[in-house]
Image (cartoon, rainbow, N blue to C red):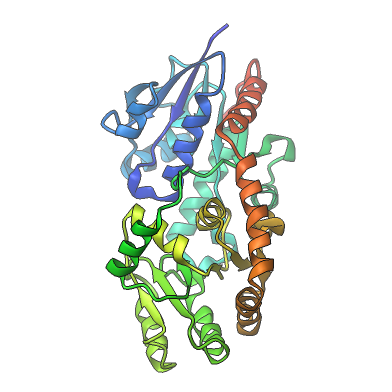
Amino acid sequence: MTIKLGVIALAGPDHGGTYQYTLSTLQALQHTTGFDVTIYGDPKNSDFAALGFRVAPFSESRARQFAALAAYRLGVALSDPFVGEDLLLAPIYSLALLHTSRPFAYTLHDVQEWHYPANFSRRQRAWRHQVHEALLHRASRVICESRFVKADIVRFFGIGEARTTVIPAPPQPQFRSPLNEQQLDAARTKLQLPEKFLFYPAQFWTHKNHLRLIEAFRDVTKEVPGLSLVLTGKERDEYQAVMDTIGRLDLSAHVRHLGHIEQQDLQAVYQLATALVMPSLFESISIPIYEAFQLGIPVAASNILAIPEQVGNAGLLFDPTSVTSIRDAILEMVRHPEAARQRTVYGRERIAAMTPERYGRQLQDLLRQLEGEPIRTRA
């Protein structure tokens, strides 16, 4: 019997990691059987169109979300836009799910606001909590990508472990094949890249921890004067503080900020880098780590929260709150390149195991569990 499956795909290309996750989910569904899939999203999205699934127009403005949540709290039922489906799957949250009569699973990517409340306004914290509290009450299953996030969901929302499923999504195959020497030389000239450098691709948010990295790198340059640091990311939040620190520590000649760069240029930077350094204070899943694994680039990353689970033995871990620990990890990679290269082998093995086919089987098993389950009533 064919099951009608609606996938609520609200993320678009501007949503970064959640959009890549959405695409990974949809690609995995191509490897399932017994489902008639309809994407609820933007019919003009060429990525959606290329998948071959039916696309039903659907969007959700913030005003519409407020109305859906308020109606739910007041016990007022709104129309169900998914009435023609048997099951629903949402790679990111949709508040229309509060008013559906169909069993659904949705992905909660992280609850960073509980760990770093200063990164959010009081209104943002209240909104995130109310949204997920309501959705978690109604969801048949909640999906997350790490055991760390699962523990957070159980801890902060009191959700039973049996309703919380850990399924890491494979990263997008953004770098299908290595660039050749000619392409790399052209990119080095175009971007004015140094001969030997560390790479940190991240927005300048506080939790990305640029300031400690810069301090650690100052100490590294005393030991390895020919090493540089390359940064990407838009000029926002702590950008000016980071630039000021670079100037104050007399590192301007050793640190290069590229801003936002195109996909092929990004791949070239990865391939030319000595190593990826990821000193972030919070990640549920770090896409740059997966990208480095794909290209066989050594990784040094924070030893906190979900990152050790993602990295395993494929990278060097350090304490991101310690400038000394960050410095020592960088020096370890630079001074012992053979050990660093061996860890990249493990990184490639981890990525090779994360296939759309495997992810599809996991999603199929999860969705089959939802068949026949009673609809969870409203709070």
